[in-house]
Image (cartoon, rainbow, N blue to C red):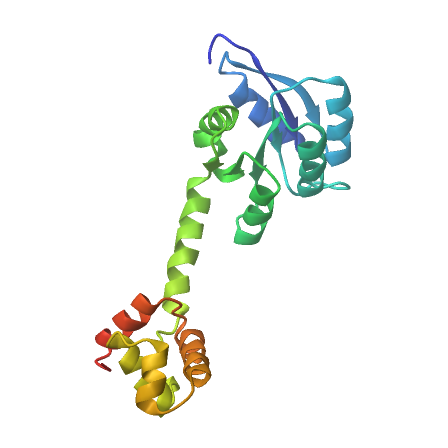
Length: 216
């Protein structure tokens, strides 16, 4: 990368942040700051007259904010990479930014250590996620398991448990219907209710659940 000058535009409403970012960026000979913008509208105006490879974009700016600007940029300048650099550390902003085409999400608190890595990753077409954001997402993911209630056989009716046991024995719907002296449609309805209540869609999954609960 050091043989090529990649042109970068900085978009942030704080002068001191832009100055600090410029200082880090231009220490690497591969990069040059082509322009600076104070808000989303200013950024779009700069893009009309300034060629660039990457934009380092803040989310919280007056007037047109970063997310609004990102939407326009991805439509008008699809080849330009956009790296979000923000103080905002929450799942919703991260999700919206990445869904709208951001090449990465870097927290300002980690910029001193990870800015150049994030920029290089973005220019290579790789997604960069700030370590603290990754930790937040991982924690959120793991907590989602803690909040899940494991399917419980107590939510099933006596007939549903009976049919579940026969499914676990490998019996087809028509055979279950014949054994219990009910219609195939009734068996199908009970089977549908089983999948909805237990959150298990496949026959193999129902068999595994039945065995694990000792219901067969």
